[in-house]
Length: 421
Image (tube, rainbow, N blue to C red; front, side):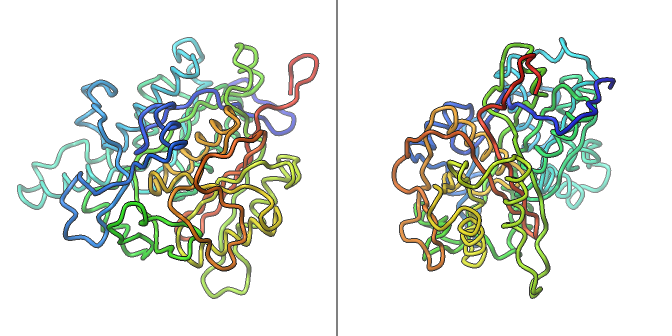
């Protein structure tokens, strides 16, 4: 790459979205579900979950991958990679980009993954157990691997610039955006980023149970209630969103302006170990992201919460939001109650949803909670969408084990008279 920028932070514009979520495949189907409160959570149908304590999940339904993923790749890759390949195609189409028109070493791929290809791995382990090692397919060596999705997207679209994967559980989708900006600073003109995850198989579900954070409710409408007095864990889900990030000046020069919006600030932290006298990382992570965006808390129009639906974790998040923005001073929402937590895909989908909120000037509601828990002194948007001007959004994400990230999104970034930033 020869386009390295030697001055100041680079701004990236998010110019294409590819959504593959339990709430719908495609931008407008997902957005309509979010605004009308149509849930994608239901009984697990991908396998017989009757013998497991968790029986509800957000599943991506009605996707015929034969129409979205090249046939030769279907048996070589996991369902999680199928979702990302479909999302990447949709995002590039949405951005109006043909990768063949761009220098191959100026295009990069960085995605998030929390668990890799668990369903593929389970299938091959079963073959090993029942039939012996000669029946394990060669693609087991790569299809389960966390970086498999990044690699397949890179190969499919001829993107030979820097590539990578962030394995930071739910926070990974925001960390991927942070890495996308670093790659833009290093000279990449375009980065395919975001993330998907899909661990709704026995092996994948069992791996999630030891956290003790999953909801065991069988009542769809009351299974995932972040910040509520009845909060008792979250519903798992699959899917996510893939985004096209372009260096802002390059996006403007090809006539798409700032696209859906720009990344103004990003920060990441890590929580201290349990029992430490040091405070959780979330408050200072939000403050650092705002400082890097050069914004005051009063400039923010809505916060997309991480919303873990764990009593202690919800209180930490609510207190951090109140400490930064003031108690009840900024609308807070968590549309993920309609999808479940999507791990590596969850924060990426939140970013996509936040960009649509800025596009249409409406804050989507949080469906499910009805009575805030003591100490959660936040303005949680409930019931109906709330119309308002949305110029700046903060998106929060936390990953199991202590990962903490925040991004600040804006509708645009000021330009100089020559179009530079």
